[in-house]
Image 1 (tube, rainbow, N blue to C red):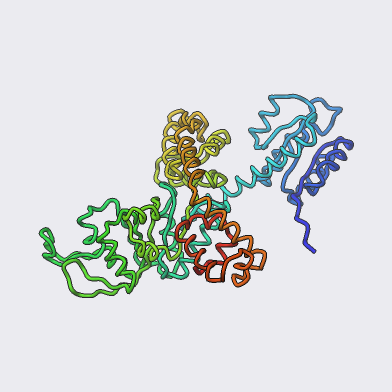
Image 2: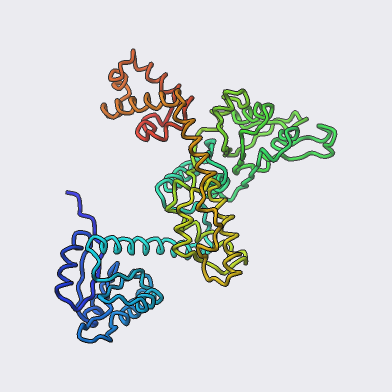
Length: 486
């Protein structure tokens, strides 16, 4: 029998027995309720470490000046600084509400609130506390100066970290990292290097699009003296520089065709010759490539070799864009501000809830790199205005104007909608996945359900679909698992 999930412990402090019973009835389905009617009972109850507290301002209805709840708020936060506390009162008193929020309460509600709204406010308080706990742990982690690479805890980032660990442990397979500009492809490459058996060995990063087309081969493979007019001395190339380590080839799609041929030969046996030389040199390295381009389209246009494509994508990693993992934004903000503080550029370490809300609504066409640029600007503005944290007014006003991104998205959606081949492939993959699920993943049975001539017809179909539409496979995790070795 499955074990029931553990409910968060909610301490409710109120001197009104009727209200306590009412709240207990309405909230017990979601919380493990602890009740206290007096200051002393509350002090005893806090010892069991509740996850959340609901405190009445006045614990003596006969005394109009009673503020025992405010005193308990101070005591609770002194002992448990990170305990989320929601204050509640029968009186509409703005001054007291402001005071409680300044002391550290996460919310203030009036007793007329409905049970449904109160439950939602308590949920929000608990979630806010959990988000702050994650940020706090991250700050502690950074304070220890331990190596931090991929920031985030969203499902796409957990999957990304898992893939990094897999290829890092192997240490040999070629890796192709794909993702939009600004998603952190070099960061992922460095994480592969740091996490694996090649940690401690060289990590060499090369931006292919920054190299002159005439000098790409020389830069990658090195050259001998007098190999060409300006070759006054022998030069060691990036591949030799990375010996026993990791070579990161960023924007591999920009590699000229001649260099593609030579790189393909190197990947076949890990041997090469310098430009102008005859000596065959053997080097053991792991090749990690990256691109934001559509390599399949470049292959169709004759600008990228298909055989090289299959060599470099031994294991493909897709980095999710920031708009698909907005839950990670508070952690990323904390991490970036910590970096700016370490560099001596700011003392500001936090952003207000309003500022975080704006950052979370924006769609980030420039991804994490754009977030870094926005925060660098925001701390300058915030410091000039004397703010202790980034406020909404410190952010650029156009963060709420998402037209450039939305236009891009609409255009992409239209192109996607009318891509007949891709949509047909999606339907085919969906049918194949359903057939495999129906027979427990047995390929020898699935082809019959699909009405194909034989099992080899299914294999040929899958091979073609995977070659022509590799990204579609991310939409079909079961299929991806069954055909992981293809």
